[in-house]
Image (tube, rainbow, N blue to C red; front, side):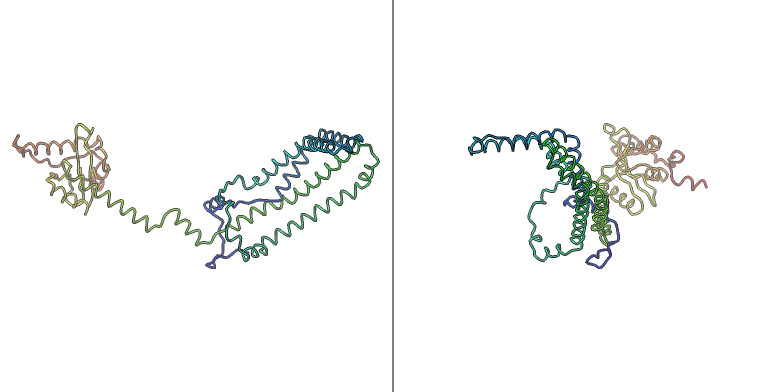
Length: 384
């Protein structure tokens, strides 16, 4: 049965990648205790199978040494304490491989399905954990009930496996009392290894069921409502209204910068009704003339007003104005295909400036400045 959110919506959507990542940052990842138990028992069986001979020899030597002492050692506390230290040291040395492998398995087991998670704040105390109401809620929750049932089934299964093994090998356990030390230790080792292997098989069956259950349960706990998914998408992509305001503000700033560049232009090429393009050419800085402003309709009219107020000359050349507006962005140089047309405009403007300074005759305003075929966006329509 799906959980319901506070708003009453069912959590019917799979968790998003962001929700899974946020859960991981908080240390919330799927874990399987049964898989951890399998790792530990399986590791112990493996190390006993590989290093069992040396462990058995060390155990046999330890038992023989512990049972062999003289009367003076038995009556001298200092000597007995020294013997105890020697036995403990020998026991630790003999069993060190097993405990080392078990320690590695215990550390690696939780990482099998959840991976490495480092959460610095996980150890910090949380007030809600101290609340009796929260504690009782967790104690009697469905998850706790499922955990109790799983633990009970695991205990019953292991009891059945262990009881069956002891019952079928009872004669071998009983015969150990009549065996010599070396044979008794070796036989005990084989019995323990076989019992551990059976336990590992039983745990493998449980883990094969528990691992998929933990993964599915984890994802179900993180399932999302339609509202949560929509809110998350809005958070990641940004509120459309805010984004629209940002884009509008960016356009306004770009337009103000563009208008500030118009008074510095050399000429504004216009199509009287729709287009205006301002051009600047600095021979020592530019390889070709640069478009510093452009616009159509209302923006085109504003460019002409600013140019008129700043004394920037304007020239009507409709095909060139349309071609520049279509093919050249603000800040870009004029393409080579339009060099000839733009050169005619700039030559006229420079001659006009010379005439204004009293140098040279008044130039003739160029008309019908042509642009290469395909550059004027209205050429196909005109030809058609």
